Image (cartoon, rainbow, N blue to C red; front, side, top):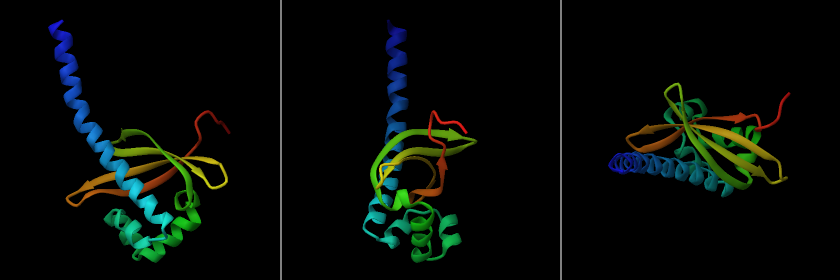
Length: 133
């Protein structure tokens, strides 16, 4: 019984920081999506990593890329956060987005932690689960 209690206590201690990390990451992605919905590309750009900011240089360029390449992120009808997972040392947050037309998209957001907080370093569109080519 003591072993079980010890294991549960250890697991709860580890789950706490991971849950807080997940909450922080979800909040960053959510605030960026809220900024896109408001056409506030300056705020949306502030959640991008320095690498992304260097590539696009201005909020306007960044906004044009998102409108053209990720319309489901620019105007989502529904956003659901799925798993936070690690791949090759990088943290990825999977997000299911339903667009304005009802189509469902799965995206992975690569997140990096800086002194200023979590930033979005990449976004990739995933194949929908259960579909094959």
